[in-house]
Image (cartoon, rainbow, N blue to C red; front, top):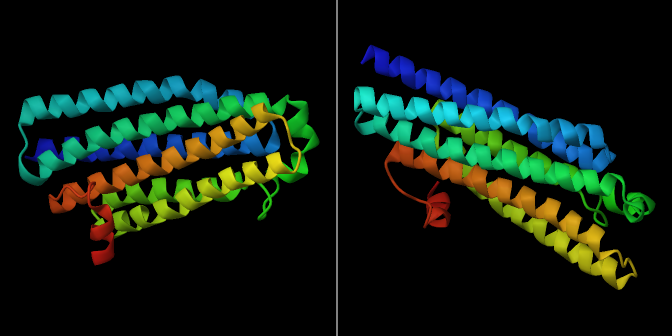
Length: 234
């Protein structure tokens, strides 16, 4: 049992390191968009290979533990949860790369440069990717902290924040509609901006998935189909 707990602790440490790398990718990807910096965008893209390798390593370790120790009860739930979280984190990395690729396009596009004050500054009349990415990053960090601390209440907080990001994403769509009506006719730019917003919203969904899996690990309850009712009870 001592060896099993040692392996599980190592898994948790590995997930923490992976999460830290994913958080860095997300922050850099957002910065590349706002600052129109292709060098930063390329840095995000080149990080993806290491993320993929780490994801495979963690999965192999989980399968090894299942085969060698045949864990039960909470130990089994921990390993299953780490397997699922590992996949969500890798997908978040892919979405950060997608954001970086959108940043590469926008950095060299004249229509975007001409409208930079409208598009990238914070405020009600702009694409506030900084604010949106901060909420998303906080959700990601909290979801993994909930895993490490075995804190189902913290996991529930993450699920609550998903509504905030959904609303921010909705506002992006409304802003695009407003820009089209005001005469901004470069649809390609608007599609890329909406894609960034959508990718951030999907990252928030993955963070919510992680939080739901943590609740399962702690409580043994599958809440993903009734997460709203569960959150209301907290």
